[in-house]
Amino acid sequence: MKVLVVDDEQPARARLRQLLDDEESYEYVGEAGNGKDAVLLSAELRPDIVLLDIRMPGLDGIETAHHLNMQDNPPAIVFTTAYDEYAIDAFDARAIGYVLKPVRRAKLTAALEQASRLAPSTLISVASQANMSVARKHVCSRSQTELKLIPVTEISCFRADQKYVTVYHDSGQDLIDDSLRALVEEFSDDFVRIHRSALVAVARIDRIEKTDDGKSRVVLRDKSQVDDEELIISRRHLAEVRRRLKGV
Image (cartoon, rainbow, N blue to C red):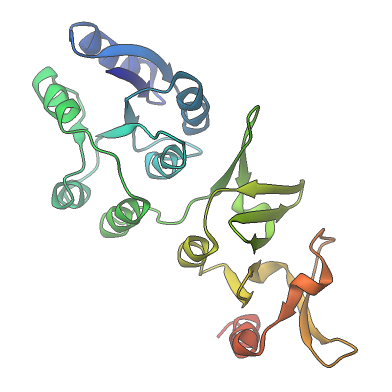
C-alpha cells in the first residue's frame, strides 16, 4: 500500500516516514508540507493512503480531503491530529481513521488498517460537529496537464450546463467536477441561486435590473464573462435574491 505523508512540520513528516519504513505492508512514496502540494502529489503518485495533518496553513486537512476526494481514484485518508476531544468524538462517531500526535507505532498501524474513503457529506458533518470550517476556501479545476485551486473569494458565478459546471472567477473561467446541488449546499452563506443552473456570489451583485422584455437579472459589480442571459433571475428565485441583497 503506497502512503503519502502530509504535514506542515518537517519533524512530524520525518517521524511518520520512519514509522512507515519499518512497516512491510506500507510503502512511503512521498511527502508534502501543505494541502495544495498534497493534492498535486496525490494526482501524480496515486497513493492508496494519505496521512493528512488537520491543522495546516492555507488548505487545512478537511479542505484538502475534499479535493483528494475529487480525484478519479481517491486515496483513503488517515488524519493526524492534536485536536481536542470534541473533534475526536466526531471522528469516532463516523469511523474515520485518525491518529493523535505524538504518533505512536501501534496507533498508526491500527489507523492504517482501518483507513477508508470518505464521502464529502461525511467530511462536512465531521467538520461541523468539531467546530471546524465546513465550506472550502477553494474549488479545484482539473485538466490532463494542470490542477488549479481557485479561491472562493475570487468567484463571481457557478453555472451548470448538462453534466459540467463552469466557474467564473477573476482570472477567467474553468470547468469543475462539483455538482451545482453540492455547491449550493456548501456555499449557501455567500452565494445565492438565481435560477436552476446558476449560483452567484452575493457580494459580487451590484443590483437587480429589468430587461427590455420585463425579466429581472442581476448586474455584477465586476466585469464578468458570464452571458447576460445566464444572469436572468427566475420568478421562483427572485424573492430570495432580493432578500439576500438586503442582508436579511
